[in-house]
Length: 160
Image 1 (cartoon, rainbow, N blue to C red):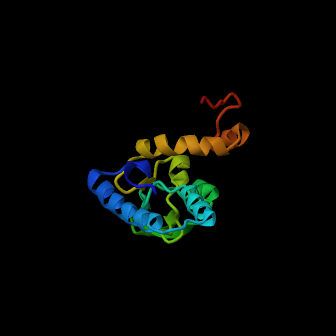
Image 2 (image 1 turned 45 degrees about the vertical axis):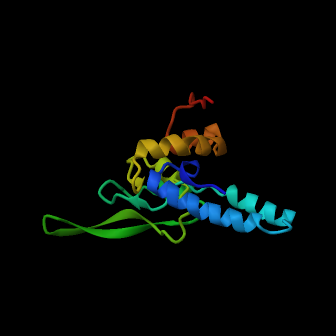
């Protein structure tokens, strides 16, 4: 059972509340006379789900609708929508990213690929998100793919 900063950076009050909930769930599980291995396998599969940030938001002032976030989202939680903007009595349609919070699992990959730093988790800035997400993201993307997606030169290397 994971809680507090083991899940993702959070303040002490949130950590305490989450720890109380985790302790309650753990005590129910441990108070049984028999524990089956299938339940343990199920619980370990839940722990492997990456979920770092809740409430990811798009700053519509920064977003240019490039769709890089849509490409990396494994949960199809990001849509590109047309938004009307007024410029000197002229209404222009502009594309912007919108995150569906019901589908979003909070992995933060969208934030790590956004060149304009338009996607942030509430209460966390881009640097904090990048430090946590980049190692996971880099492990899953081949150097060649990373070079294409980030428009890097062929000399790009990953240093562990």
